[in-house]
Length: 617
Image (cartoon, rainbow, N blue to C red; front, side, top):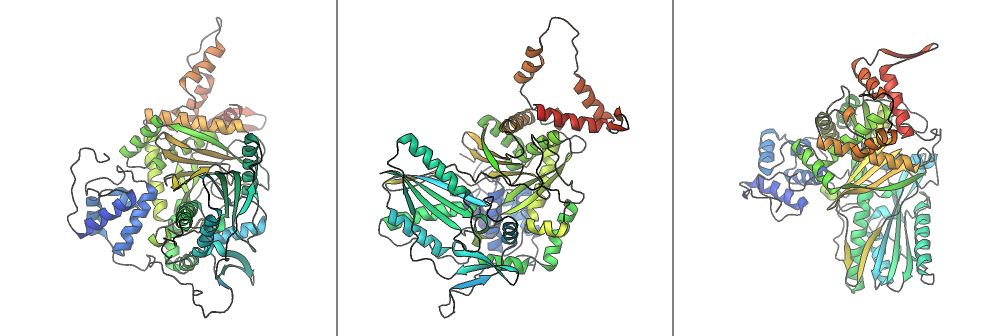
């Protein structure tokens, strides 16, 4: 059904066969026609990364992700590879291999020490600066319905910890340097902390379960002692339990949570039936990745990638001047809250259609909308947004629990008041360029480029966006179902973090925001404005960013007409603020306001007016 009426064309040579198999593997399709577009078949940035990882693995060549966007069918990509494929170069990472040595039974001691990855090193130093913070906790909660075999679940977690060295790792200082300290073996058994809430009334049970889940998600870790994986089981009834799992970000990421849940369910099913683990042994561990990253990303390899980022981030604004409800504290503790949000199926489909016409992904369309909104809020035309990327460019890392995710700084200039279509093109180029240079860890960018730091601000960006492309897990075993429950750590790393997932009913997700800066009403207004702007963009992509609506026509009529109805007085065809806005576009540097010894240009007046309007709105 995805292919429509286009005829199927089979691969015609070895290269096309390899590419078609890579496409079909990540798209979960039985076969792929060589003329089908990867993105029309449901592909997106994350799947494109996985497909290119498989292609690199088979061809043993370093191929840029951009190539798939520019040649999205098997036939087109094969022609590009044949025409442009470089010889095997030293700048391409070698295949991952196990480098840690403590599988040798003759070695002495109970632990092995290895260097940290770049990302782990940054979290280690942040923890030294602010110990006991739950900011980097990763909580998950699963509601289990059915007959639960608690010993089998404990056995599943025991095997999980045995399989993944990251789950038996702590972090300690050696002569001033942080090191991963990895236990050679897992504990003989992981015992779940079972808390019985069944005696409470139904309403009390739910309230107490949420309270305990909330408290567990916010309980800090001690990186030097561990363990950095915590589990708890709340018994809600004879056939209902709530499983709480919390990890520290230094050993895991969002992808890791999916790996953890999938493996625990698989292991539980086997152990509850008296079978052995069906999971194959892991070929490598996270420490192997950390060692290889340090060895590969240095010298000329690092310098080539850094040069692109130096040019890309040259002259980047020190901060995004968003209006806040409260003054920004000098030393932020980053308290946060989460607002649920949904974008309709009609809007999602229209945005996907627009992006496909422009050779862009849904993520790029959402990023263009977000950056347009931030430009309207701040009055700035140079906008940076942070975007996590999986960082698993090699097939061997896909099944590991560990901290692989990297953060890209996506900078888009909106000078000249572009149309939304033009803005989408700029965002596409920025994003593809960043994807091609994603190996440089964000931590290294901060260290080398040394951006101007502002108290209470994260470097480079204060707003982040995440599009969760992995499908939601609907897991079950005979007699037991697993359902995810929302839980958060009560913190917010950034001013705003927009986190969305595509579903059959549209886009659903959350807006995480700092509660020391914004009231709930401001977060709600942010979501409404983004939705209205995207609706205007897909309806009129040739409208300029300044022309895109932030409120609906009905709300505009309510404010401008119904609430201001009067039978007397003049009726103006144009509002005063529209006159100022138009003048600001014509003569932005002209003097607009003079008071005492100070003056404002039209551009400055427009920016301040936007900030005030947003605050009052």
